[in-house]
Length: 188
Image 1: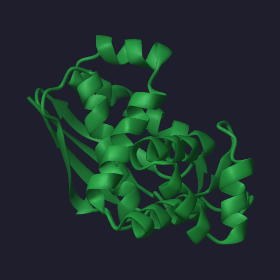
Image 2: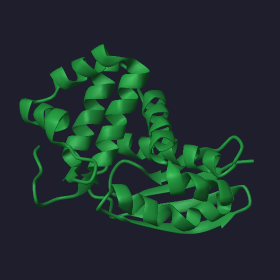
Image 3: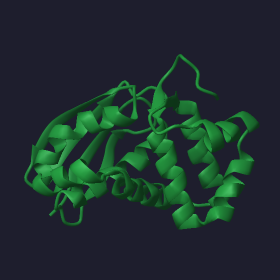
């Protein structure tokens, strides 16, 4: 699970954000138990080798999430909470100002660009972005599993909040178990 040259990748900042936020939410002891459940090569990579700007195998990201869920015994609620908190942590500076200027509808104009900052697999198409609702389709997202899609739901809800949406709700309407996912967003 080290930095393999082939296959889909996730940006190092995603790993760092998940680990930092998990420690803030769950505590250092829990994160240590997460590390302990991982194979040695994955544990060493996550502890010492992941750089914010590097790209790492998507299998390692899935393994991190699986270990978090196994150790905590929690599910989608934790994944969405960490996804949302990671957005709050990562969206600083210019991005934070952009989100304050954008309406929730306009935020979808940068969805594909933001996605490609974290994943090197798949494409994003915004089918519609209207007042209080949108539909986004992700295709070719090789290596994705359900947990990664749930994380994107939590992240997306938080991005909408940053853009001024009230009570954002994202739900998977098709797919969400592999390379394809169709998501509906609603807010007030």
